[in-house]
Image (cartoon, rainbow, N blue to C red; front, side):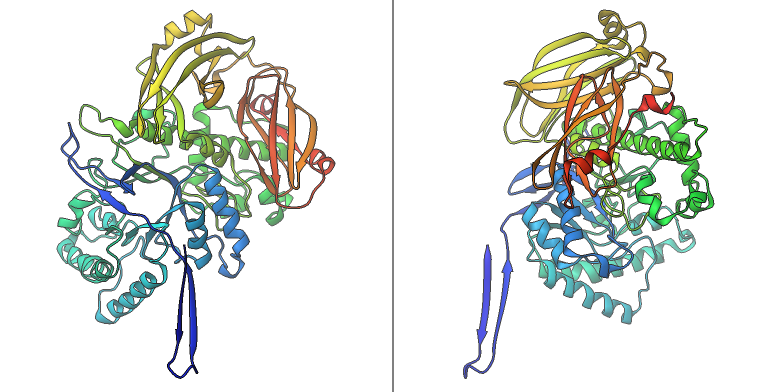
Length: 578
């Protein structure tokens, strides 16, 4: 709605007018006992509807804020929406965002988890600092509170966890630090937020124990899976193993690193920099042991590329790194989405939020982002578009059993046909298992289960390494969700065939809109399209099982179909090793 407030003095000599666009909605943070568990729920209701939060963390979009134009913000937020995200968490280690950021979020229906700018540090607790904080908080509340996109205020990022886990050697005087923490985040910040804005919940920190933390400024374990939200990072465990992930009420941070593409790194580097552990690549890596952790995860499921061409080796290692990041966060995100409606034997689960770290980037370097500095989508962002889809089929293997869940975030029940397609890397489609499935609204649950050995024997697959599965949900002839599942590490596959990928045509369908037709002679894993032309594809990094596929490209600049076709680069996993 448009709201116009005008003022004219009695004598008519002074006038002023203020125009705002506002919206109306209700927000509630629900923390109540969970059946068959000793903890509390932690989820948000918007207009009385329980909403599963799907999104990413937002960091400053540039080292120099003057370069963050409305066009930059528009592209990043529209990329957020296009990836089926409904929330961004503005990290407390950055800045209060530009007005355009919140206005765009309002218009695009993107909820904002807004932190006050306190993160990963111990702050002063003298009266002068408290006066400064009070002025800051009140100003930001009055500036931002009319935006309906903001659904929660958060006092800080990880400062509760820092004291609870002794990050800064505070245990020798822990009670004093807890008292000072309460003075800042409860007695100062919360005491200002509560009377000025009762329309939104306030949480003191992320992670926290939610309601339990309200009773005690610093919880014994802010990462408790039975309360509040958690931040979880584990770079050493196998990210394909779902048993390594927690089962929290809400996952507000988790992630894996990747480098940006060669096309993004090239303008800020020289040919002497183009090896994975060059001084340039180590300088651009600001996470301790980050490059070793990246290579360690890659080696779990893929062979590192070998090429006599050093540049090709460099490009292919980055390509594998982006595959690894995308698969890790896909696996973890789908795990959280599957357990929105269930708890395990110990009462863990009922997860109602996934906000991975992170959406955007501040420079051309290694990070956890899904969008590179400059706007190019990493493979992760294309994957997010699928693993955050409102209706999702998601599979995993546990104790030798292959299981598929149907996740439905919609307000209406879903009914359809589930197809479990088993493909041979060498021979194509081997077998399709079909059954009707349904799922209630706002729910998730198991819809298919079979031992891997039975699945393979009934499909005529000699081994897990010989085959790959695609799970497809259709309703009235429309594909609602399609999701591949690898039965083995890709490094174990020995029956590859060359897919001989070719672009057969590029056609312009509208201004800056193009349709690309790709032909393949065999199954192509992680089919990847790149171009130096600014824009993004409708799909990328996909498993191609059909002879042809059409992909759309949305350009950010004027370009012809001929120029696009000349500047298209195709890659796939087979080509890395042959």
